Every structure is written in structure tokens, then in C-alpha cells.
Image (cartoon, rainbow, N blue to C red):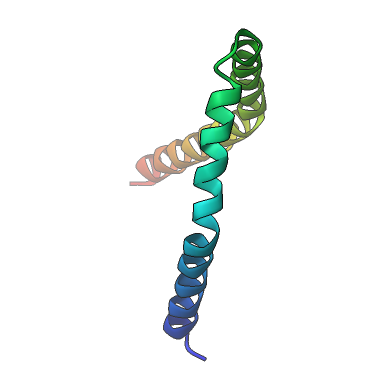
Length: 85
């Protein structure tokens, strides 16, 4: 099985899955909106937003650290190549 054929099969499986599951997901969103319209729901929304930001901190910090190290390494290599030229 070629790589292209595998990609086509995977994309078709994902699209089929989304088409079959998508309708129930849309129905749940409407129910959640109604439930979260109350004052208690507004507090819950604020807590979820704060929780999401808190959970995003670790991946963003990891990415920033790796990016910083890569930039430093690249600059160091360029500086070494300039001294030899």
C-alpha cells in the first residue's frame, strides 16, 4: 500500500467519522448553551476558561523553550561559520 493510498484512506475514514458523529455533537452544543445561560453557568464558563489557560501554559512554555534553544544553536553555528570564513 503506497503512502498516497494510505493518506486517502485515512482522510476518507476521518471524514466519514465526522459526518456520522457531527450531528449528535451539534445537538449537545445547543443543550450546553442553554444550561450555561444561568448565573451558575456563567461562573462555570469562567472557571473553564481559566482552566484552559492554565493547561495551555505547559505546552506553550515547552515550545518556547525548544524554539529558544534552536534559535540559540542556529546563531551559534552562524557565528562559528563567520569566524572560519
